[in-house]
Image 1 (tube, rainbow, N blue to C red):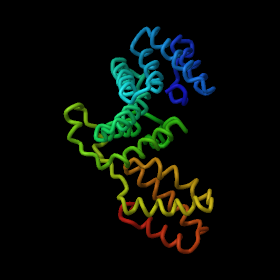
Image 2: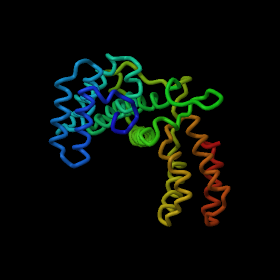
Image 3: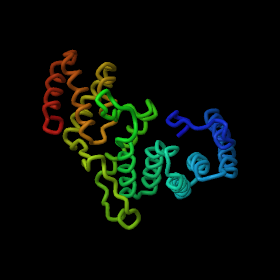
Image 4: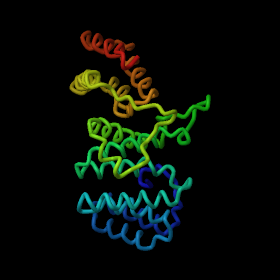
Length: 262
């Protein structure tokens, strides 16, 4: 939330000041001091909005996965009670934290559900910037913090894609739906493996240009049509530059031509 610069909050709020001091203590390696400051913020929270902020930071200083989940749920519940523009941009992070908490507990189906909820919010047409045609820019969602969220969501979706959804229906009723009812279409395993092999080769010889062009699009691939277009465009730029060895040039051309990226 505040530490990544994703949301502008009133720095004069006592809760925000305490959380700022707590983040500074974290950066200095003083975890116990940080936790005490976040606890103080929770203790003085005057409303659901302030409690949401404090709970977010308290969640990451718990000693068990169960307590981490409890505080993340508290944070999410408080945001739901606020239900206005002040918390709208919190949700990708809130759902992502819930997903991580369930994943730590081995509840992969529920983790996958919340990774999907996070993806839904990242792809929310009401948020983010828009281009000159009025279309939302899904890749300009609070800069590097937005990239970090997107990368973590994409990794979580890939890691929990095979989870059985049965347990979800008993605990949550708001199944996520992406804008336009478009289903997420992750890369199939065979194509994903081929791209990873190319990336591994580029890493091995420090081909920074190829990595710089392709990694953001690959790591942030949530499975939307915009993701597919972005990844294909990035790979095409590397292919068009023709600086790769012949075997990689051929393989990259085949990957670009794969049905999943057309």
